[in-house]
Amino acid sequence: MKRYLLILLTTFVTTHIYSQCALQNADFEIWGVATVNLFPSGTTTKDTLDGGWVSFTDAFGVPFGNPPVLLKSTDKYQGNYAVELKAPVAGSADLIGMGICNSQPDRMQGYYKFSGSGNDSLAIYVFLTDDDPMNFLVNGDSSTADGYGQFITQQTKSTYTLFDIPINYKNAKTALNVIILVNVNNHNSGDISAHLDDFSLSTPVGISDIITDNTIQLYPNPTQGELHLNGNLQDVQSIHVTDVRGINVLNVSKLELSSTINVAALAKGVYVMQVVGQSDTSFMKFVVQ
Image (cartoon, rainbow, N blue to C red):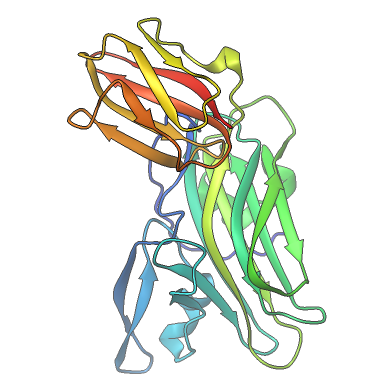
């Protein structure tokens, strides 16, 4: 896959305490507007996806009068916006994002729709590497990455569908940089597009990985609606709940804190509660039935 183009990508550090990996603006909610200088003269404006996401096709094509391929879409899985990648006839569209890790995530997930046909394809790749991100994009491929996974489809999906990419590692090394590459390739007549939303990385958390707060107990566990906190809550500053993908699903501030937390709105599954104190942070696992 040595087909990456040179571009300046911003590396950012955002630590997610549970998943220990982060993709900034991975729900694609934050957009801006940029002024693009056209050649040989003039300007135009286009929507830009914030958080280190970029499209090579847009970066090099729009200044020469090509229509944008990275579009802000209200046809979303959830939230307000999603990404639409639109590939013209016999062309392609791409999206690249970056993140930071201090663990080995075991999979990447997200939601997509795809309007291609025949040999048209949507491909999503995830790489983990300690190599300089720009050097990897220019010279790297899957064989040089410490961790690698891919999802490739030619099947049309008219409704949002979950993709789930297992990430395989060639060693036990924890790589620092996460690079996400999305390609839509059009081999047929007519424009095609893919809609993308809610990308996430997940790291498996076993019971031995959870730091238990001995001063606070949760019950009942499993629960069908309410969690009771038994212990000294005076030191607690806030509580945050994440699902198995490391996505935050519930926050409780100090002002809202009580001995009972209602989790009835959460889907059935395993969750981790992060209890933030004045001097430390601890974690407890619970199950919603």
